[in-house]
Length: 577
Image (cartoon, rainbow, N blue to C red; front, side, top):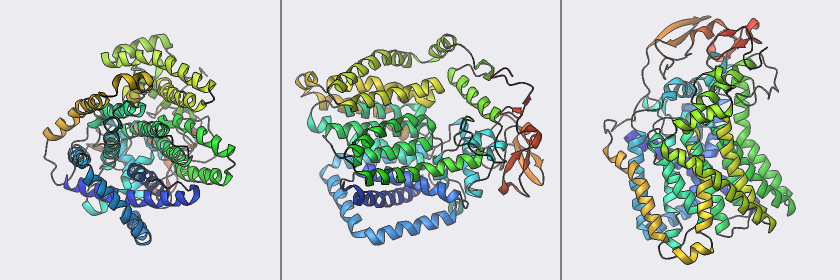
């Protein structure tokens, strides 16, 4: 716990300094002066991920990357120290005035650092998360890495960020504490920014805050904080963006800049996991306004910054798999020798889909909707079944409301409803595994309920009780994570839990040793480099003398029907060729 807490201090200081510098630069471009502490931290996290990804393109992400980041942080403190101190002083004074907020944040930090230090409960961490991070720590990036293990092509900016703050060179163990820190920011914002206790009436944004709190207090989610995975982070980020967006509307914020900043975070979300892709649709709202106002300089700068955020992710995709986006071989724009067979990507995509349906067999990829939906729905818990059903009338009500507002020439409300619906459908159609998108099932009902109770009817009826209701609900939903944190195993007092040691067998690929799990498909962190499937080693070769030069398919298999398991099919099962 001590090391995890220390890593949080380093993450927090670097994220704050980088975020403050980025927003100060944007202030010179846009003139927007408001800088909220949550936005500073998350914008810092975003650009630290960009830095880590860019660094990985030229060198391994380890001691030198940390040293260079330290130099950046010290330079920011040197040149902006006075401004930073004035801002920090305001934050301290606010916490002194609102002592409840300070108590909540301290309690939350204590609970989350305990949970983050605990055992890793995510199966995929030992399957590929740990290996992905170690490749970044050891080599930065390697061409054709997906040929060795297809899941290593699940490129996520969070893995580069985890490698940047793993501190392996210093503590002799690869820490994985970034997710816990980000959840601290998200939950801290969700609780401390509640409007009902201050204004004694319901707000739509408060209902989404409750959704964020409920989601992060689900055991399926807070038990994953010790894992370096992306599922909880990306869903929490989607909630944050929508909460801030609607909160800005409630505060009558008319400037474009804060909405553009949220669009930057949406792009960052895409680099974490593609399931956040539809949030980028919201960018159309400030984009149209900027064009109408003929602020072309801002448009150019925003496009440039957005490109800086997403480009390293796309470049890493091409280097790892040969494709702009994995697993979408339809975006085949680059003729590189390390390109994975297109069939492997299609196989993987369909397998993800069938696992999302709960069928767990890629051969069932063409199962009709009616059949897989019945199976999928029956496997849901009773509350999730009810929540899914509620989405139908909620979506209808939301679209009616959005169209009504659109007829009054306020098309923004309709577009946000459309964005929320698109985010839900992307998850549901792509791979409706509960772990991938349980948060998305709450969005539309909470949005509609918030709009209903925050309207004129709600104001007259519930002005006095809004604060009490919200405080009681927050306390109730926060209970599970607080109780677990105070009662979980305290055996990791100095260090956080380490990655699991997995028994492996040595195989040869050229002159290099590759490890294959002795049982199952988990290799963990220490059996490096590894692949879960020995059969793949018969199909690939080194591009050069060692693994740093990457992997490619042997010539005879580059166009073959190669499954993710290293099996060569005689025919394409997905198109019957």
